[in-house]
Amino acid sequence: MGLAFAFEIRAQIGAALDGGTGRNGRRRIVPITGGSVSGPRLSGRVLPGGADYELVRADGNSAVEAHYALEAEDGTPIYIRNTGLFVAAGEVIARLDAGEDVPPSDYYFRSAPVFDAPDGPHGWLSDRLFVAECRFTAAEVTIRVFEVT
Image 1 (cartoon, rainbow, N blue to C red):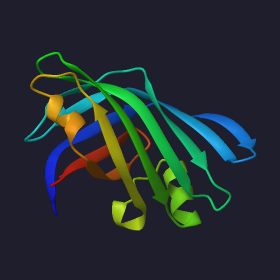
Image 2 (image 1 turned 180 degrees about the horizontal axis):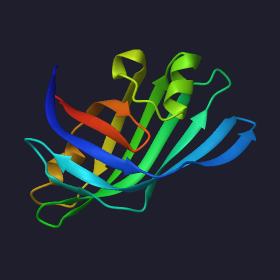
Image 3 (image 1 turned 30 degrees about the vertical axis):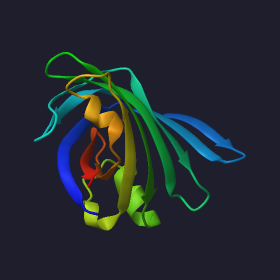
Image 4 (image 1 turned 180 degrees about the vertical axis):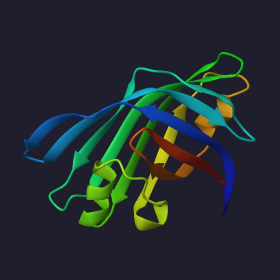
């Protein structure tokens, strides 16, 4: 078993809507406003209208679940559900929240995207497992997607 780089998603994000603290933690909804997809296996764009539903735990770290769509270069729409985990020290989280560009080596941000693509040239996305390494800035999330081989 191994990993093969498939493509990179650069999802532009808007300001988070903070839902306050509830029983399970603090809920934040981060709108996905657009972006790009590029790589050896897929190219296209991120469609606006999705969101990342973040649950900030009591320790400050987050469970994330994003729902959004891509449009491949040929116009094919592809749905994504991407779940992940963001773990960092409190001071790193404060730097990110302040809009500072923090190197990804200072935090752990990984995800497991699941794709729902129609039959045809992009159907392979629905028939594979993927993992991703992610990077966060105030303006975008970069998701480097790897196919589990």
